[in-house]
Image 1 (cartoon, rainbow, N blue to C red):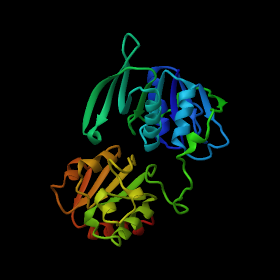
Image 2 (image 1 turned 30 degrees about the horizontal axis):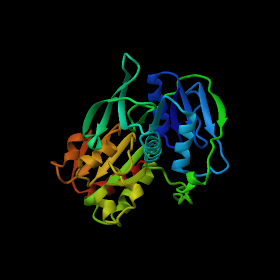
Image 3 (image 1 turned 180 degrees about the vertical axis):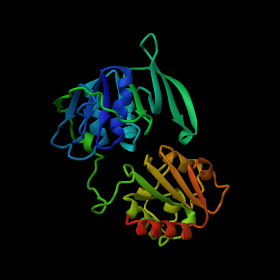
Length: 303
């Protein structure tokens, strides 16, 4: 059996699409995400204590299902759960896979995976049973397979030892806030924004475009934005239709987070900034002059 772990992260559906390359897939669903049309069969995990995320309980569920191959989205949760599974079963885990192919003898998988924040691609062979791998975000576009999905409930056998670590509460974003990882437009700010107050310009532009505001790692380190707004290798991986990068130099760690953007507009005083070379459009100038001008034009046009 080929199993794909699915939760409420959009990357889960990308992992399902990727898993189909290996054959018939069964989705293992935690939560209320809809997988109809993506796979022929799904198991929805139900348990009276699984109202919130509990990594060891999720891992135990996978162990009980005993699949031959397990795929999970390359998210914090996907990595954590499969790391628990790997430790319990004593098998290797291959993370951030972007390509996969079964070898002729059927006993191994040939993989290509991202290393060093996506700046290096490594070819590897994965053996062992089960074979565990996480799929890098944006490795494929999520696409329904056009099949009717049969859903069957599955209740794992769980004890207190599986709930030592669990989510105790959630801090939800303010009502109406646009999620960074699903926004069609993201306005990002770096050191060039200058201060916490400087982000008010970016927030105004994002509001007009129906988008979200993100920041580079230096911005979160300085306390100008919360870590949840960070775009990059250790932050959010985004794939908007348009990414507007303001005052961001474009270190490789940041590029990893925004490389899946369909179009990038850079506003920067430095024409030699690394991110300018990756831009579809670049405005060389002071963002504190350029962004208000863009906002004024949008308001003039009634946006």
